[in-house]
Length: 128
Ligand SMILES: [Zn+2]
Image (tube, rainbow, N blue to C red; front, side, top):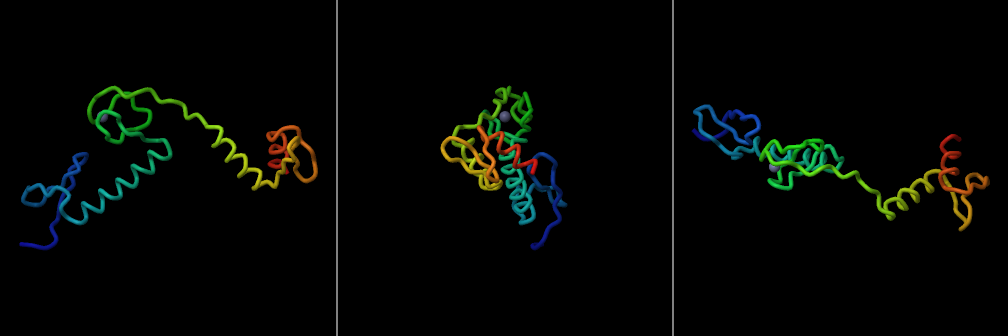
C-alpha cells in the first residue's frame, strides 16, 4: 500500500520505523521536515554558543560537554570568546548611535555634556 505511512521515530537514531518494522530512513516528508528543523535548531544553538560541533565526528554537542556523546572522544576546552578590536568598535558605534553619543576626537559628548571616556558617556546616557 502506498501513500502516507505512520512512522515511529527512534529517539536519537535519526531513523524512523514504520508499522511493519521496516526502517524508512528519512524517506517520508515528515521525517525530512523534522530533520530540517533539527538542523536549523542546531545551527541556532551553535550561533548562540549553547552547542558546538565535535571536532572529531562533527556531531552537535552541548558547549559545556567534556566528552562527545556520539564518539566518546574528549572535547577541547572551551575558549572564552575574545572580542576582536573590530567587534568592539562595531558595538561601540552601535551604542553611540543608539544613545546619540558623539566623539570629537578628544572627548565624548552626551547631550552637550563632556566625558573623557566612552564608558563614562555611556553610563550617563544609560542612566538618563
Ligand atoms: Zn564526537
